[in-house]
Image (cartoon, rainbow, N blue to C red; front, side, top):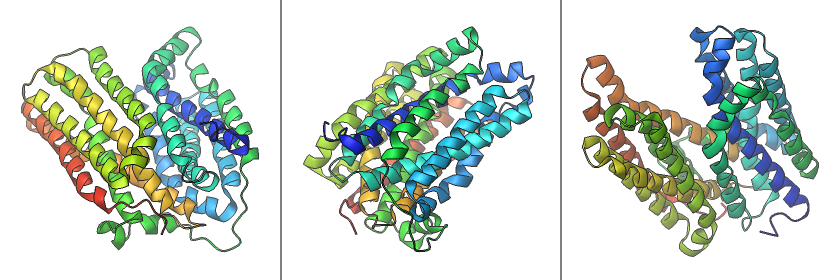
Length: 405
């Protein structure tokens, strides 16, 4: 760990952790205080726009973050990303109307989309393969404390100081991350022309469709992992409250134990990767996620509701094993000068998998709602779909490679 935080690389690592902690806390805080925001701005009808504008900007800017970093240098593009994040936070804190608030969230999302991909780029360019697993483990762990205290912290700040401080309060963290990371990045713009659509061409290619061993198998694995876990995770609260009759507080505890399981295995992942290798670790994580989803399907079918908590903790542990493992496999397969494009493609795979998983796992729930049938059998199929995604991930895992191309 001393090597990770020594010298210039140490400042980069510390800055990335500060930025990740800020991102995680902000996401959970804003989700908790959005009802207060729309009530204050008299805009209940625009409630979804506060989230939709942010994610629309992420989708628009994420594909180009990596190619721009390859062409103009990671430091320059990361500086733009942090400026956009700060401007969006400040605009949201000062917004007098819902229209300006939604616009500020769009600006914040543009910075967030660039920053998400550039985290991978900076790690690929600044850290060798012996240090990357430890840094990924720490970044995964940065989500644990926000998952536990974030929603409550947001409610406290909004009640005592006002919701605007929930945005303005993150500005010092953004400034600290910029001061740590930007001066320490040592890269130069690429004199050669870089295809701005390189990440899209990498991800949406024939090689990806057939899960070609190496880089493209890593893209497919990342899609399947996000679809399996986050597709099912979106419906855990609905299962526990709508089918099994638990309180919302108890349901949120189930999601929290998954975050704790994720963190616990993420810290152990570097040593496990050295011992068992990429394919074995990704396969084990896939089976853990599949077993967890099957456990929740059993709870929906009538198994003891207490089974949901250890089952979803197992799901979080599966993500802790697979997330960093697949990320490292993709980065190690990137050739020099291609790190940015591969990073954007990997981030796009994560986003595509999450959206596809939420949609496909939600089809039975939507059909139940429109057909006016019982939720209980529909939610069984929802978690069965998550289990199917995990089994497909287990089949792709042997095609992962950790060596450079």
